[in-house]
Length: 209
Ligand code: GAR
Image 1 (cartoon, protein in one colour):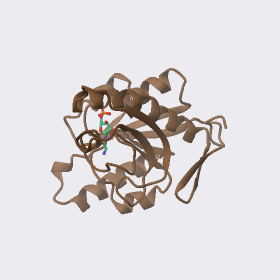
Image 2: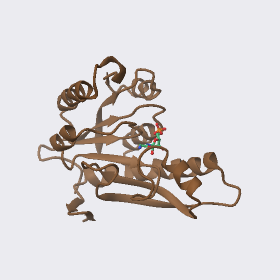
Image 3: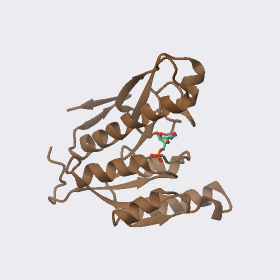
Image 4: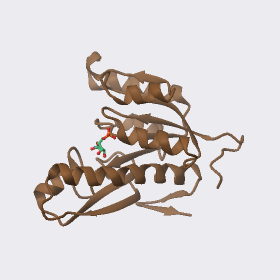
């Protein structure tokens, strides 16, 4: 329950991010402030221009760039990413704004050890632009979800969710901003629970013990 493995070491987490990296920053800050008992051992990115890389450098976190555009096929990219992930020796991989579908081979290699943050209340509005999908659909409540990654698209067992009501006068940007604020709380919370060995996957459910 104390976030340490049997050798008394902190859990090792690696983060995958494709862009701005504000969720990655929330994780860095939570670890630094002692709210998450983990060591962030690496940032992996598919995008050499990702601002997340600057955030990693500022926090002295090693970076591996697996540039999607440099590979002849998705399969070749995934093979290299799998190799890079294996090299992390991470207990947990955190998809924090990683904008690609994770291939089945990777999901199977790290079963129960990959989590993702999604900007909608899953199973509604999976895939890209969850905030936009919710706004255009006209729902009254949306939110964010942290879930385990399985072979489905954003369909794995849910760890944490937060609701955000849509307000009169909201547009896609104001809604996305309020969702993002909650994402920055949810993601560190889910990582903390994982690192404290408190998450038990029971079929579709995650029990928090
Ligand atoms: C976040 O809103 C995250 O939930 C979303 O991308 C944004 C990344 O922002 N992820 C997805 O849509 C994954 N399908 P960030 O780079 O500032 O963390």
